[in-house]
Image: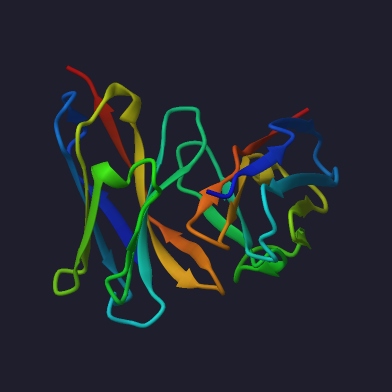
Length: 106
Length: 121
């Protein structure tokens, strides 16, 4: 299995902040990396696929970057609706998820 | 419009077999590239992938759970069924199914609302 490690596991930020979450794969996965947002009590939603492609309907404040083993999700200006938990998922082989990053209000 | 919905018991006893159904609409599991995946999330913990079935009936699951899981599809009913044997309290979780899209790999772009399953005697 390919292991996915996210950091930090949680962060506190203010409305308007630029936030970056990182995800590291245990081996190279090219750009086979997806990002999801999950709000409490809700199912995950796909934000970014293939490391940097924005899913249809997702605001452009979300962006993804990286290749190989190191990836990042950036939210350009945090808004109240962005406070949630974010997961990375590799799609290079059978799916595995990172442990999640909870974004909380400072 | 793609929708998925999980159904099954909310409470199972240890050692029992869990059977969950995912009933979907808005797509066909006969369409090339399409699949349905199952996932779970214990309370307060991360997502875990359980199983995936593709349009061509190819089936995948993680080695750690492979011996306990069975995934099948019924395209006439637009349904995917997951069976998990020998349930244990650590299997208490919300179980989700999701539509798989070919994005060069496995992307899950539509999800069910989830079904909380508690394992307790």
